[in-house]
Amino acid sequence: SYELTQPPSVSVSPGQTARITCSGDALPKQYAYWYQQKPGQAPVLVIYKDTERPSGIPERFSASSSGTKVTLTISGVQAEDEADYYCQSADSTGTYEVFGGGTKLTVL
Amino acid sequence: EVQLVQSGAEVKKPGESLKISCKGSGYNFTSNWIGWVRQMPGKGLEWMGIIYPGDSDTRYSPSFQGQVTISADKSISTAYLQWSSLKASDTAMYYCARLPPDTYSFDYWGQGTLVTVSS
Image (tube, rainbow over all chains, first blue to last red; front, side, top):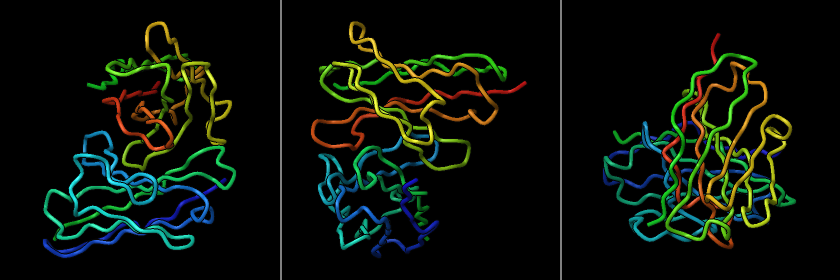
């Protein structure tokens, strides 16, 4: 079955830029989405359709796509951004979606 | 205001059946896909499947096909996730979430239903 690969963890200091990657063979053909999940809470959509930001999501959250890799970028990281981040996309046929394994962002 | 309200926590024994629910409000329930996501203790998110309440068109992840049943009753704006025979490995938090038009992202989430399966 289809898989999306994320690094297990990323660490940055406050004010720095965090980049979280997500790799998958079908990413050139399928949209990617990104979610933030804090402990004990439901996930929150932070990026949809590769690069679009839902209303209410701070401008410091952005995303890009290049070939089989997509990247979530958080500029000027704040302590409140510490969370798990998940990418989501579809397999090559668009039949079903999968989540990446998740990346724990630690703000040092 | 869009809201998805899920049924309460469940404690079941292996082999028992279970049906949990997710009631939508604040939007046209029949016109948006709604899906289910599993999160096992300390683990990541898993996409289980989605249903279009308007015509009950349903799509499953290969990992969950045949293991669960997703259904919906549009007359009461409620989606369901059910098991016919629970296993200990079904212990997890289950979230329902709405898909907005034209994307497969989840824009609104329920609060989650914790299912514990233990003898």
